Length: 339
Ligand code: GLY
Image (cartoon, rainbow, N blue to C red; front, side):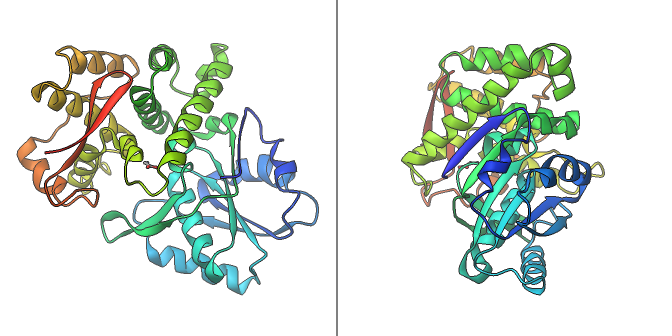
């Protein structure tokens, strides 16, 4: 990635777009107002070619949607000089990155993530793609955006439940690489679980600063292991369990357990497994449970290991020798373990 900018407004976007001649804004259809009021006014004069709005459920994250985006681009005259500016959460940025990576063998793209989860995880690191039937992220590629511009005030558009999902990924990042930030994040999220609460409590700068630190921590890990063969796997702390939890809950009447919610439960389970295997001190799971609860996250997984194991065995990240887990030994240290 060429550039990462974290601000609490969208005005800094304009200079980043100065070098592009033909911009398509591809955005989550729930963000009409944000795009109209904050993105479009910051596109330099004469450079906007078109806008494409996307439906962004997990079902919409399909190869068919990529074909639809490419078809629209083609019919509106997009060329190899065009660039896509993806505005939205992780589903939007995953789809925009993938469509840009294959349209005319690859055109330029950049992101303005608008969910906490996309800011600190999905929109950073060059992974993009779509689901294959109900298996997540089976089709995709590694391609970096030209830049990611984070406007933390766009979090004002985010429902509380989705903010909590992002909290889980922030906490995950600082369990992997702490330097005092895990405790800062727990303290912040115990008081604040929306942008408006952060503003009311005068904590928006602390929130923006923790977002920046989480993203740059992820960037450093990704720089060492772009293709996810080693150190980058640590970013999957809690995810082995989380993917199974999400899959098992997918057909629930309420739409199931969201990714970030499952990641919080998965990190608690990972700490329990680490303790069982003698890899972590006895108090770690209890500490995570108490901290996550204080942050408003649910920590009890509704499924048994017997229900989860067959689903975990199907995960694309496994090796032939067994299921791969990322297990924490303490705050600030995690290990990649195959069991
Ligand atoms: N979300 C995990 C990664 O980017 O590697």
